[in-house]
Image (cartoon, rainbow, N blue to C red; front, top):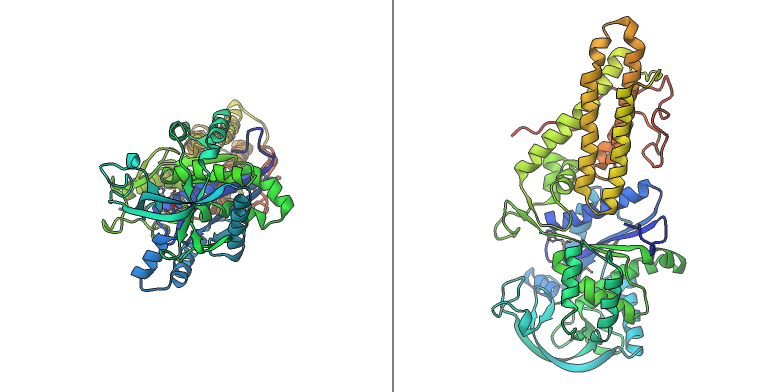
Length: 516
Ligand code: MSP
């Protein structure tokens, strides 16, 4: 992530989309925030100054209608669903620094400030407009963008709306945006989405309608220059990314803003890749560092929907399998940028094979032998044989691969690399056979060395997996009796973390096998 020249070294600002409060948290919203949490933990572990933002998007037609359907006032309705998001994320152990709501006073203030600035600069004008409006998308479509007269996303016939409104001169910034995206190949990643955006920018870019008359909608932020209108929900919501860091003071803002990494799915590419950077240009702010775009999850091959009854809820998954298992499955079974399919059987297979059998066994075998042969006391490492050096090398390679794949947004490959090293460690146990050597008193020192290497392996696994499966990594660290900052990086070199005489605990089950 913050690897290119535009990044201030050692800082990163990570954001999720602000979720609409017309639906409760599900697999899709959970995936984005879990990826962001993994990234934030990864950078924090390496000592980066990290700021991680999530929250809820609460204004606009869609929410006003959902509140009405629920028989509630919009504010009361938004309070309730926003709290459900917050609760879910808190119970899921996610480590965001702020949960922002678009109804927060500081956000309302920032939106009005930006509108005032852009208006004063002459980039907002009053005009009339007719267009096909899809409430599901909260946007106007041109004739050309519709498929067979319906919204390409929702497959519903949009409403023809003609009214007087305020417009943002988005078209004015088309060439500048095109030039910026062309000169910064990794601004929008992966490349397929960059190409999609470049294709959009080859068509004329229309100005953006940024208001709604109060005669039609009152649930929004009032325009600072016309009390008869509220702000279009996207012009409101996108600004949250600035609100949150602006609130930290000028110095923090200057430091963090250039490292902004937005994570979204492909459904909201256009607002983030076109509306947002042009809004920033008009407001006189630099663009974000990266827009990271992932694919869409289906469940058992079908689109997730309330009516199909196949909505996967993160807390159900946590209760059934544990949060780490759910995280592991999402990160391991998808390629960032591509669509993926969620199947509970696949989760079970993964958890049993990779977590219970592979890493779980490695932890329990190592710590049981350490107990059985040395009452938990780590022995000195006497020599380094070729198989010991190869083991150490396998983990050094995994650590390097994790860095490369995280920088390249390929968490599944980072996990593969860690599990290759864990496989190597399991083979090391079979090949060095400490359980056989232990029968011969003369081989005791060698058994001590082998087990010392294996507790190093467990420390390396805890360090490498911390961003992905944090609870389990912390549990391994606790069984090893590592100090509080024992998983931070850079860390003690291999062989230096455990002084002779250091005690490790008896193993407890990390990942129970899931019976089907
Ligand atoms: N409120 C806007 C975003 C404003 S950001 C300033 C919005 N909200 S949303 O609730 O509809 O969330 C969309 C996002 O939720 C997607 O971009 C993605 O991050 C996540 N996902 C929702 N469903 C998803 C899947 N089925 N699969 C993957 N991600 C999904 O759009």
